[in-house]
Length: 188
Length: 188
Image 1 (cartoon, rainbow over the protein chains, first blue to last red):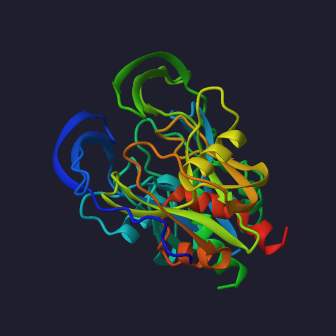
Image 2: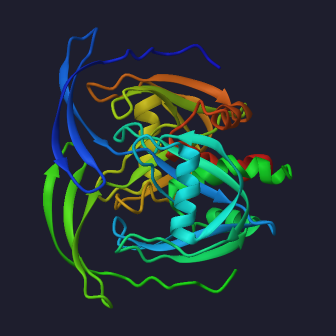
């Protein structure tokens, strides 16, 4: 690693105010002061609960996937299952819950595989990636009123191909695959 | 692949209205109607310009990285360089520009490696991943007034290790690494 060309300093956080609120997000303006330059500025950030995404691996080496209409891109998207973590909920428990609610699948040995930031520049939250093994259809789904989800399974090798071919595009699903791929290649 | 358990339909897009605007984002409310159920509902989405992230590979197998204070997470983040694409700007040209402006590095053979969606549920935009080879320091930086960036280089193998160890957490940087890793492993 080269020596740093410049060392950025930590801005000092000031007051913050709610600008707008939706069902799942809040926009906040937050004052920051640069401790060296003395600059004061409001930065806008989006507050969201932490999210969880689930790598649900079947005994046959398939992953459980969901395909949904996504209003952000006004189109369909193929993703690993996931959702928002409830206040106080353990990330692994949340992953197990979201997997069951969205797909009806359950498995064994659920554990935290990785934690990423969806977007450190504009979002305050994290996404946890939970690995579940021996995933199998085990009951009905429990969707929100407007949820409509195609549930499918696809072999891990093909999921990785689809992602690398640009047919799985959600960056958080891709981040989950990035963290899972070495385990898969190592046969762990 | 199993047969689908359920096939989601495409919602019909209606009118939309601007709810809030910041320097880099806009929140819009958009009406949607479900063509089967007849449900009508406003969904909130964030409109942002497309972004570009750059895998800048040096002749010695290092990647150019940037470390910045990020107001979303109120902390520092180590990332690949990138930024917003200007209206009408070609993604590859934007990647070359952002690399030069943020880090002073330039290279050869710039090309589009992949395109992902930061978050299909809430964001309308895409992030393009641009690969630049033979990257080398070639001039000064051109930062925005409040930008303050540590520029460093790190061998690709170590970057992948840092990401898998949870010390590089930006999901869009990780998505770039996901798409670059097979080329790196193949020595392409």
